[in-house]
Structure formats: structure tokens, C-alpha cells
Amino acid sequence: MHSIEGSTVPRPASGFRALPSVAAALVVLAGVTSGYGAQTIEGRGVPGMTPVDLASLAVGPFPSAPVDYEPKLETKSDVFAIESRRLFGYLVAPYEVDSEMAALDTTRIVSASGSVFSDSLGALPEQFGPIAERNQLIAGVVTTRSNQKLRAMRNMSIVLLRFPSEQAARSAATEFDQAMDELTPNRHALDITGHEDVLASTANDQKGYLFTTRGPMVIMTMSTVPEPDAPALATQLRKMLELQLERLARFVPTPIDQILDLPANPDGVMRLALPPLPAGGSPTSQRAQPVGVYDAAAQMHFEPRGAELKTALTNTGVDVVARNDATVYRTRDLDSAFRLQRALTAPQDDEQHFASPPGIIDAQCLQRDADAFDPRYDYTCVLVHGRYVAVVEADSLPGRLFDPSLYQRVAAQYSILARGA
Image 1: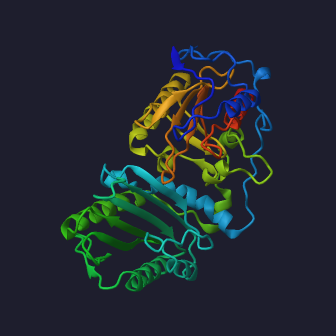
Image 2: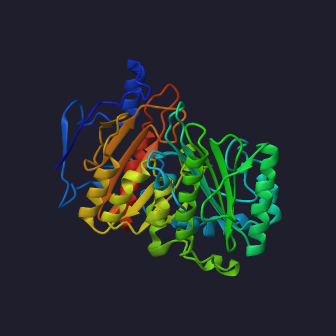
Image 3: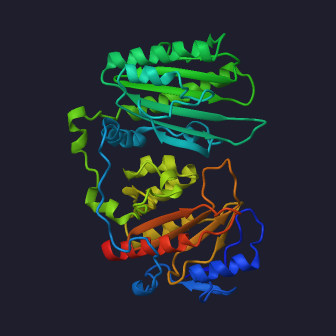
């Protein structure tokens, strides 16, 4: 049996209380008080689901049935993004190098025509953009994690870039390293034992850079250790490199003329993920990019608690994940789905449960203390239907107030799964 403590309206994410008149308005709009008060809400877990009356769910303007997925394929970059999504499944996560670097900063697709080359202090400075374009970058991904300790910083960005040939990759890696002369003068080489052909360097023995290739792939890394320590920095870069080379040994690049033949919606799973509203989408859907289908290994790079959830995704048999305005995981069976839900909703120090949406007792929701520098959302609801688990998230409204449309989106996502799974 599941149970959570309900509340009339979730408190503002900042910890401030909403004005009574505002809270009352939210109650009218969302109907969130129906049957919740301060009572304990009982939901049935394994082996079955608590029945839900689909006709009574308030879905607002959101779709309540599966929606055919039409991937955006308007440009060359759109097509190459299909191959980039594959690359996430072969990308090493920084926490695999050092368990302390577990906090997610960013995970993105890298495109020669995109704005991702913009961080003068990071792994993808603006100067790298023309190099990628000149060498005809096909696909790319980047992930960055840290320990979030300003006084003892550890962070690492790992980048995989695919070029049309081994020669183009070598040319790009060399040019990237040369561009660092302008960005970080007075660098000196770092000794990466056993990998003398890599371009590894540092200017202060605290932040290091590495560029190397494997076939048509460029591996790039920027890594920081808490204090100047060249051997420690080199050891960290070496560990990353060896993990990444091992992972890439299993990667077979898709011929360019066959990228469009890759399955964009296996088993129609994208039909089951809540899409954004047609009128320009929403801030939530924009942050949920990149939209598409991923395997469990790829999805880990988008999980703020990736290191903790890796075992849960493996043990529950997650084989495919659909990312749109909501994220849908396909597990092994109903029992696995409830186990994954529990893993996804285990509250952290800055989180607390709040009331399930009206009519969906088995949904588990978390509210977290807002932090402008953290990529996580203020509110998260995780629901189960059959072997599927869906995560619907939202930020606060201005003034740190709860957004009642989150409950509508959860209701819509449940209806989609109930009618399509």
C-alpha cells in the first residue's frame, strides 16, 4: 500500500506561504482540495493498480489519448540529431570517473549549426563552432556534472563528436587543441600514461583539457580538481579516456544515408508520452529537450540522480524511454513499474511529498526547494499504468506559487497511457 500526506495546495517552492486569496483561486482552478485536506491518502501498490475513473479526470487543454508522433525533420541538423541520440548510449558519465561528480549540470546534443558552442569557460567555447562546421560535424553529445562544492570543486565535461572520416576527426581534434592557445595561454602538456598520442594539457594543474580520436570520433574532456595537482588531474583524465574508449569499441556509426532508417518510434512508444501544447510548446517542454526515444543507458545522462538510478533502471528492465513534455519509461512488468516509481520518488534532503492529483491515488509527487542554479524542476509527479512509468514535471509560477496545470498534465498523461498502453 502506498500512502502520502496530502495538503490542500502545495506550499510555494521557496518556502513562503501563498496569500489566502491566491490559494483560494488555485483551489477553484484546479480542484486540488477534493478529498485531500490533511488526511493520509491510501493507494494500492503491487500487485495491482488503484482504479481510476478516466471520465472524471480534469485534463484541461491537454490531450487525453495517444497522439501520433511526427518527428521534426526539416533540416540536416534534425536528421543528424537522430544519430546524436544514439551517441548518448555510449557516452561515459562523470560520476563513473569519480563518484563525487554526481550533480547534473547539463546534457545536450551538439550540432555544428546550434548555439551549444557558447561557453567561454567550458568544454564547448564559441571558438570551437567554426572548427566543427569546417570539419563537417555529423553528430555530437555533451554531459557535465560536478560535486557542487565551490570551495573544493570537482567537475567534468565529456564530449563525443562524430565526423565523416577519421581524417576529419583528427583535423578537428588538432584544431580544437590549437584554439585553446587563445583561451588558455601558457598551457603545458599532461602525461596520460599509456596514451602518449592524446593532446592533454593544463595551465594551472587544476583544470585540464584532453582531445583525442577513435576512428571518426573525437573525444573531448574538460576536468577540474579541487587544487593544483597535475598527477591527480592526469589520472582523472586517463580514467575517463579508458572508460570512453572501451564504450566506443561497441559503437558502429550509422552510414549517413541510413540515419533516416533508424527507428524513430519503436513500438509506438512516443505516442504514449505527453506532447506539449501545439501553440509554441511550453518552458517545460523546452527544458525536456531533446525529444525522442532513448535506451536506458542514454536516459541516465538526463537523470539528476543518474548514479543512484542506474541500478533501478537495470533491475526493473527498462528497455526504452520516450522523452517529450513528459518522460515515459517502459519496464519489465507492473511490479517493476511500481519499484521504479519508488526509486524515482525517494525524497532527497531538499524534497518532500505532496498530494497526488485528484483521482489518481497511485501517483507519487515531490516538491523541492527551488534553486535557480539547479536543473531540476520544483515539482515532480510520477505515475504508473501497467508496465509504464511516467514522470511529469513543472516549475513554480511567478511568486513561487504552485502551477495547477501540473495536475492537468498528470491527468492527461495517465489518460494517454490508459487508452494507449
